[in-house]
Each structure stands twice: as structure tokens, then as C-alpha cells.
Amino acid sequence: GAGVSQTPSNKVTEKGKYVELRCDPISGHTALYWYRQSLGQGPEFLIYFQGTGAADDSGLPNDRFFAVRPEGSVSTLKIQRTERGDSAVYLCASSPVSSSYNEQFFGPGTRLTVL
Amino acid sequence: SQQGEEDPQALSIQEGENATMNCSYKTSINNLQWYRQNSGRGLVHLILIRSNEREKHSGRLRVTLDTSKKSSSLLITASRAADTASYFCATDAGGTSYGKLTFGQGTILTVHP
Image 1 (cartoon, one colour):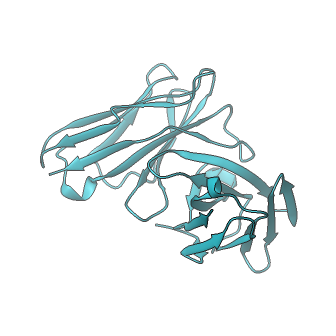
Image 2: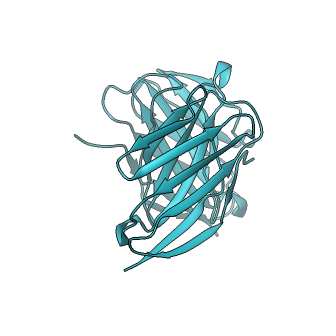
């Protein structure tokens, strides 16, 4: 079956612009996670959805970052007024249920470059 | 912020040798997971060990967990060139944070044919 997909795979934008990053989780997975990975670092948690609602958004760095999952499937991470420091790979993951004992299935990521 | 620290940061070995990577973390956990990331690709789950387990095996992988020392190790036996990748440990604190993974900085493993 299809894995987690993310679009676009690469996004180059200018400082101050708005960007949207999309994640299509594995069908039937109720939990969806966004992480951000900077070069040479491990992923850092941003936000987690259980169904349509954001169960934990404690990792979002500031109010320029926002994510939605309106129908409990596809999610969009939105970044306003992008800054050069936002450049990173944005990873999405999903799991069948929200549980501590489920592995997370990761997508290939979207590489965001802010010039 | 990263909770865990992994060492070594980089490890270079010959095919057939064993590779050991270590992970330390700071807060109590519900479980600890190891992931592999090939260059330019997403993370792949390798193994999960619960806080009440001390050792777990999966194929050529062996994971240990010492909650008193807040540390874990990943052993890959009889390594292959295809094992070349970055390896990350990730902790799940459980409770209200269940499912939210905190990753270490990773170990870059290079296996030479």
C-alpha cells in the first residue's frame, strides 16, 4: 500500500512569503505528526493531530506556524512571513492510533529553503 | 529542543563488523524507539522497547535499555554496506505527551564494503 506522501518535495521561497506544505497520511491512520529537521540534527516535534483536532501543538515555534487537518486525513502545515531560519526539512508521520506503542510511519519530507 | 544525546556522532566500520550506538536521555519515558534515515529519505522505524523491558531483538538488531542510567544502545551485528545511514533514538514520555517523539541528534554509520 501507499506510504505517507508529502508535497512538494522541495520548496524554495523568498523571505516574507507564505508557504503551505501538504501531508497525505497512510489511509486509516488517525494520528498525524509534523516534525522539522535541520541539517545535522534529529527531527523536532511540531504538532500532533488525533483525528481532526490538534492534540498537542506545543512544538510550533511561534504564531507564524499553523497546521490543519479538516477532514481527519490530509494535513497542511502553513507558514506565514517565512524567515531564513525556517529553512529545514519538514517531515510528516502517521500512525494507526494514538498510542505510545505504535511506530510512526514517516514521509520523505519537504525541503523548504527560504532565501 | 533535543532530549537525547547519541554517541558516537559518526561511526565507520568494515562490512561484517558489529556496530554499537548509544543514546542517553534526560526525562522518564514510556518507551524508546530507534529509527534509520538514509541520505535524503524519510525515517524508517527499526525497533521499539518499552520502559519495563531491558533487551529486545529483531533480526540483526539488539537494543538494550537501562532506565536507571537513562540510556539505550543499538547493536547491529554482521553489518552490511546497506546499513549505511543515520540512526536516531527517539523517546516517548507517555502520559499527556504520548505519541510525541523526542529525537536525539543521531549517529552517522558508514559501512565500507
